[in-house]
Structure formats: structure tokens, C-alpha cells
Image 1 (cartoon, rainbow, N blue to C red):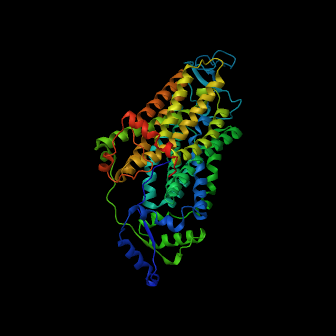
Image 2 (cartoon, rainbow, N blue to C red):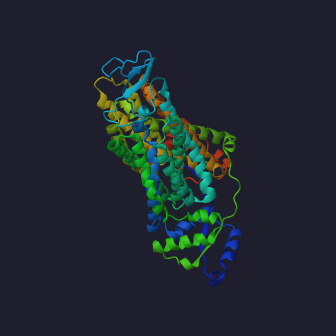
Image 3 (tube, rainbow, N blue to C red):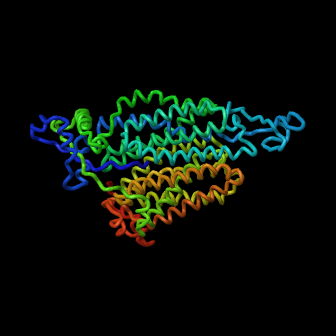
Length: 546
């Protein structure tokens, strides 16, 4: 899941007096802006759900819209294996002699100092970024650099998404980032040089993750209780769908420019879909736009066939909350700092392993399409398993168990002889990919529950930024695998086992009240080894869903 600014606690209540209905709309908005929330904050937060229902036709139709709009952007993330595949090359002309050297010579995949022109094996691919921009020999690191710059855009997009959506609204942010993704994606496919391509590809990276981030926040603002898990994790299914989407485009088109155009083209339909996407009711109330929020709530009540009378709804704007804390505030408290640093490493390790595998199957296993397809299909049960685990088994046991299994599998891959065991290594790698994909999604909820309210945005946001560092480093896995496949696998094994071991010390958060301040979080200390293992299995005994 993704980070975003949390919406302030809202209170919606049914008002009986007829006089309220006769008041001027402007006077009502001004009155409600000055009202403050009283009573139990948790109950107030769920008032909007109690009126429109935890889930219903109104929510599902609109969630379907943001679900569909998110897929093309995520497909861009997984384009690099197909736009920059390993491609055989050979020299066709040298500077000194002008002699043409053909593929059957000894110059295949060899770099000659005097070579001035290359040809590429395009028996399967029609056109790749490698062949278009001659990213071979001394220019070969530029392909890795392009991937790193793209993932660097992720970090920027994550940061920008929160600011834009909180300032201008969720609906406008989704429309804006969708338009930016469409324009930059199509324009990127026409770039004549490497420099201009990379410049626009960074913009694509920014828009792709920002679009999904805001869409995810929009969904979470309509969720409560167990539905927050179900709908939030449901949005995660856009990732495997997007992977299959780009796989189909790559197999049928086999040209990186047409692939990028095909992935971006569906966004042309986005204005039609987004026409039916309203603003987030919670954001409207938080901004004091009461009359607009009332219209949306009334429509939701009517569509979901709720018993509440839309004509009798009065909305109150919540009281102004104090300024949210920063990462500096987190690091000031020793216990909170220790928990945060452990979670930072978990985010880094999970991102490094997930993107390291999904973007480099060809370098790690020698096969691209089949392995990518199987891994993408396995991502569906991985997400479903993650939902079930979070509901019934808490946070610690699922994450630690899956991460530890992945680490052991990576160790087994290291000791299995490479000769004649390609199938065994492939199966083990796919199972490890399943474990990493499933456990990564759990970190969003665990991190948000560990962080106090006043620094929750800063904690989850900074953890996501750390994950982008793991994604950037994952782009180097292909080059390391060219040296020796054992190098990245060893790094995966170390990351997984260390992450699982450190997480034993963290407290379980399922069923616990969320801390409001760092001082409250300080009371929930890191655990010893014995207590850490005990808390892992506490929810196994109860088998009780939240």
C-alpha cells in the first residue's frame, strides 16, 4: 500500500430539527466550520461510514474507477525488462579499416576500441532502447542509470502526491497526474536521444506512482475496520494486473516505442471514467466545503439504499489539529527510533528483493517471458494470502514467516549446483518471489500502526522513501548477475534473514489501540527474543479476525 496525508477525523451526524433545513446554506457552512468534535474520536471517525455503510454500490463503483485508472501507470514500472532486454550485438565497422565484421566473427558481444558502428540481434525484438541509443560497451552503464533515474522519480512522486492531493483535492490530483502520465508517456516514446528520453522517463516515474498513491488514499478514506484491509489490499491487485498488461504488450508489439504508446493509450479514456469520480467526502469536510460534501453523502445514502434520511444530514467540520511531527521528532525518542530504524530496513530489504527479482528475471534465470508471466500470476494468490494473514494472524507472524522462508530459499539456491538444475532454481526463485510480494504489502499497515498519530505521516512517508532507495539499488541486480548470479542471490538472502530476525524484536500491533503521541509509543518497548517469539503466535491461538 502507499502513503499519503491522513485525513482529519470527521463527524457526521443526523440532525432532527427542521429549522436546520431552512437555514441559509452559507450560514450553515460557516456555523459548521466553527464547530468542534466532542466525545470519542474513534467513534467520530467512523460516522461517515455509519451513514453510507462500510461498503456498497456507491463505494465499489468509484473504487472500480480508480482501480482501472491506476493500472496503466503501474505497467510503466515494469516496462524496463522488455524495453531494455539483454541484446546480442557485434561490430560492423571499425574506424581505421572500414572493414565490415559480421555476426559469425569473434566480435559478438565484444567491445573493440576502434568500433564505430554496431548491429544488434533483432530476430525477436524489432526495436529496443539498447539498440536505438547504442547502450553497449562503454555506454552500457547508461541503461542501468536510466532505470535508477526512473525509480528516483518514484521518490519525488511519492512526496509530490501528498502535497498536491491535500491542497487541491483527491479527484483533481488523480486527473492531473493521469494527464501528466499520458502526455509524458506518449512523448517519451518519440524521443530521439538518450538524454531527452531519460528526462521524460523521470516524469513518467513521478506521475505513475503519484497517480496510484492518490487513488489509494481516495479508497482508504471510504474504508473502516476490516474493510480498510480488504479494500486497501484489493487495490494492490492492480500491480499483478499491470504486470500482465505490459507482458502482453511486449509479446505482441516487440517494439519499445509502441509498447510505451500502448501502455499510455488507455489513459485517453480516463477523462470519461473520472467524470464519474467525485471528490473525497472526507477531504471536502476537512476543508470546510460542507454543502458539496452533503450532496455526495446524500447520493451515497440513496445509492446504497441506507435507512438514513439524506435530507436530515448535518455535517460538522473537525477542530483544527496540531501540526504533525517530522522524522526529526521520531528520532528524538529512543524506543520509537529503534522501532522505526528496524522498519526502515524492512522496507528497504523488501523493496530491494521485490524489484530486484521482478525487473531482472532474464539476468537471474536466463528466461524473461515465461518467468515473468508465472511470477505475475503468483502475485494474485500472494496478495490474497496477505489479506487473510493480516485479518487472522496479526502482523508479525505473517511478515517474519514469509520473509524468513524467502531467505532460506535464497540460501538453497546458492548451494544448488547450477548445471542441470535450472528448473529447480527457477521454482525456488518463484516461491521466494511469492513470499516477498506477499510480505511487502503487510509493511504498510504494520508501519502505520507502530507510528504515533502525530508522526504517522512522517513515519510511513519516510519509510516509503527508504523503499525507493531499495528500488534504485535493485536496478543494479542485472549487472551484478552478469558478473555472477550468486552475488544478487546472496544479497537477497542476507537482506531477508536479517529483516526477519530484527522484526522479532518489534511488538505486535493487531488489536491494540494506536498510540497518539511518541510518549505513548515509548511505553511499548522492543521485545526480547523470548517475548518476541511469544507475541508472534498470539493470534494463532485465537484465530480471530479484526
